[in-house]
Length: 451
Image (tube, rainbow, N blue to C red; front, top):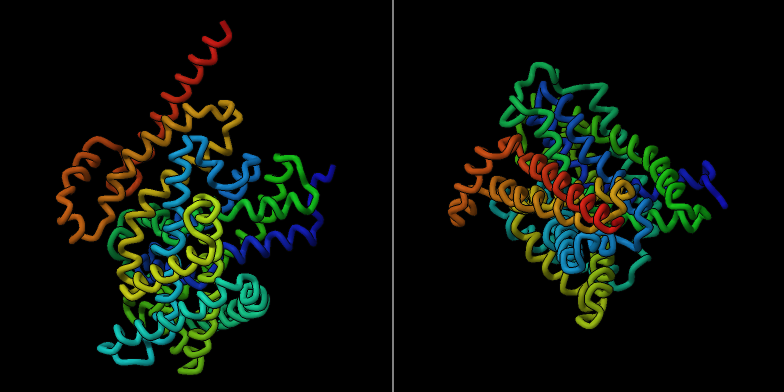
C-alpha cells in the first residue's frame, strides 16, 4: 500500500490547495489590517495567520482523518438535523450570502470604482454586478471551462503582478511602519484582533466545505490509509500554507506603509487600488483591476458550482442544479449591490457565530479517536459553544441592527459571566465545559456498558 506521495504529486496537491483557498478577496483584509494595526502589525499578523492559514489546513486534515464523505457526514456526528443545518448555513455563508457577492464588490472596489466620481458609484456598481454575474452564471451552467484556463493562466499572472507590486513597494516604501500608531482594537489587543480578522478570509469554513476534494485527490493518487491521507494532506498543505503566509505578511506590510500617504482607506480593496496607482500610475491600477476581476470571476464560478451541487445532493427532491445555480446567482447579485463595506459589516457577525462551531468541529474530528467519536461529546461541546457564540454574534452586529434587536443586555451578561468575552472569545470556556461534561457522560456510559 502506498504511504507517501511523490514530490511532484505533493506539489500538485499543494498547488490545488492554494488555488482553492487563495482568491483576490484574501488580499483586501491583510491590506486593511496593515493600515489599522500600524506599529502593532507584527502581532496582528501572527494572529491572522492562525485563523487565515492554520485553521484551513487543520480542517482539511480533519476530513482526511475522519474518512467521511464530506462536511455533511462530519457535522452529522452531532446529529442528522444539525448536520443539514450547519452544512447549509456554512455553504450559504461562503456562497451567495457573503463570499460570492464579495467577489463582485472586491473587483468593483479595486478597479472600476476608481474610474468614476463617487456620486455615480451606486449606479455603476449595479451595472457592473449585472455584467459580472451574467458571466458567472454563463460559466456556472457550463462548469469546468473557465476554471481551467483562468486557474492555469490568469491566477499565475495575478500572482506575478502582485509580486511585482509588492517588490516595488518594499524597495520604495511609502513610510516607516514603526512610526504609525495602531487604531481601534489594535491599540490594546492586536494579536486577538488579528485572529478575528482571519475569520474574514472564510478559509477555515472553506476547508471544511471543500477539503473532501483534496482528500479524494490524495486517495486517488494511491494513498488509502486515513492516517497516511492526513499526513500527506498536511505535508502538501504546509507548502501551500507557507506561500499563503508569505503573501499575507507582505501585503500587510505594504498596506501599513501606504497609510503614511493615503491614510486609512475605506476598505482593503480601495487601499490596493491606491497602492497600485501610486507605484505604476493608471496603467498599474488598470492591470490590477483586470487581474483581480478575472480572479474573482473564477472564484465566484467555483463557489456557485460547488453550492449548487451541494444543495442538489442535500435536497435531491427540491430543485435541479440549474435552478440552484440561477437562484444563487440572483441572490448574490442583489446582495452585491449593498456594497463591500455593508457585506463585510454583516458577514462578521455570522462568522463570529460559525467559526467557534467550525473550530470545535475540526478539533473534535482530529481527536475523535480519544473518545471513539461518541456523539454525546460532539453534542455537549457544540451545544455549549453555540450558546456562547450567540453573544459574539450579537456583539459583532452593526449598531443599528443591535439597537433594533434590543439585545445589548445579552452582550453585557456574557461580558460579566464569560472569560475572554470582551475580545470575542467568550465561547472558549463554555466549549471547554461542554467537553468535560461530554467526556464524563461518555465515560459513564462506557463503564455501565462494561458491567
